[in-house]
Image (cartoon, rainbow over all chains, first blue to last red; front, top):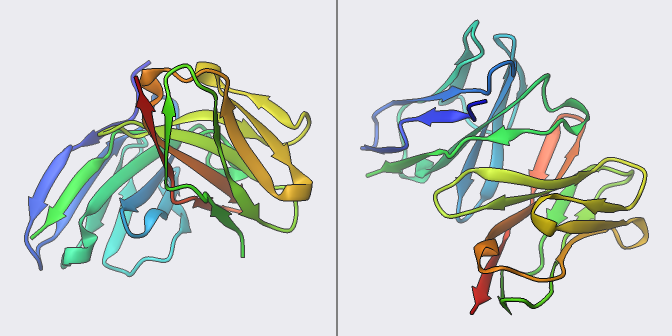
Length: 115
Length: 111
């Protein structure tokens, strides 16, 4: 069974631009969560989608948004990029969601550099 | 508020030596606890998890962890480290739709 895939793997943008990252979960998984990983803040939860609905949201500004499609693939969008948005963005999928601590399977991440 | 602390930012051990990575959590009840490993350029891989029951949990790659409620700890152990274990290790706590990760411990393995 294929793992979680994320595209692109690397991205360079400039301040003020917007970016869209994509995540394809493991087949059969309906929950997709997004995390931001930076050296200073560590791993922080962005949001979780389940059956095309945002189920949970972390403490990030509205510039960060996401969506999920009917095939469970998910995208996250960051508008008006700031230098501090440079990070590794990780996507994780699970069968039914993070409830009860269900195991999440992580993708390799998208490394975003904002110049 | 719940939190996870990994006191050691960086640990170096010799290949074949035993390993213990520390994790302390702050939470009123018994949370769900996890250990993940991240190799350079990779995502996170689940090593093991604790929900309830036996406080000694076995995971993949020869790792185990022990939940100690009295010490609010969930330390990760391995009896004999291999060079391929060099990576960053994250302890995580999940409760009520909130997942918190520790800052991570980077493991270096000396030949």
